[in-house]
Image 1 (cartoon, rainbow, N blue to C red):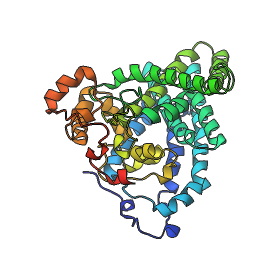
Image 2 (spheres, rainbow, N blue to C red; image 1 turned 180 degrees about the horizontal axis):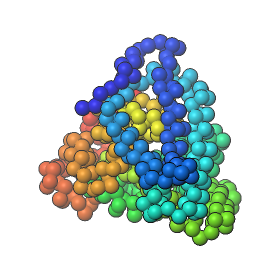
Image 3 (cartoon, rainbow, N blue to C red; image 1 turned 135 degrees about the vertical axis):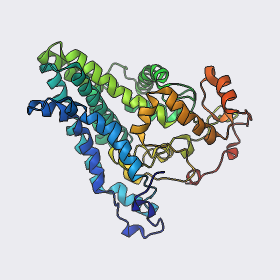
Length: 414
């Protein structure tokens, strides 16, 4: 059983003008957490080469944070709606976003240069690569937050930051592709019940890239521009990546190539891991006219675990994010009766990396969320007969237009 901090018990009817975000200072954890990845190389340079230091960052992310989530529990509180405009206008929250950028760039450059210039045991090399790639996951999450904003600066900082891991297509694919097709079989970034993360990876990674290219090509074609022009945001980000990576390889030689390749891959895999757990098995129903029902909060898995949410800018309140994509992280809400993850993202990543463990945890939750109706599950076709027998699923074949047949939640009414 998870416990909860007093944050949970805020009165939603309180005077909005008197509301204060009690987590305001704690959001700085999102700035501090990515810097943990330099501990190993920094300790080595200070004369402490013990492997413990190289694994410190990984242990913090994948053991320490899940343990703190389990101990400190969930924060179920919401800001009053009347206070949201003031929260959205408070520049403090945006400056926290921007403060992460130099941390990310310094941490990556420090670690990759260290690996290219020092001969360390393979396990220290691997730990540093994985920790640095995990840090790129924080960077992708930052770009996710900024990429949804309407201002030019926020979107360009997001694009610039994505170039650090060679993943400049993310904002395009996510905003114009994933949000449109989320929780449908057509979306390469929505995982299916019975699909392992490794099978999902081979569908999601290339699918996201090609969908982003198609979306940019269509946009540029409408304004009479070539997809190879500098107006293509994928070309812009690609040039930044090429200059950065080319410069590093030119200065430090061939040793830099496997370092950058492995770090960039693990960073991309962290995004894939998040995509995998965020909509696993959830399905939007198709109307008779061929369109899907409007995305609602119950089409995403939600998590209110305190510590992991503080270091990923409330990404885990994913249900409200998909229902209201332009809401900033400090304003995202929790609602009762949502599909809920039993742990924060870092703990769920570990479960996903061992598919039998993941299926044992999540498949029963998918069945519960769908009421056991396979027509309401985004399911891997090859596994459908097996899963129907295993969980006694039925197929009601409810017409997609009948959205009222879905369980109503407070979130759907928001």
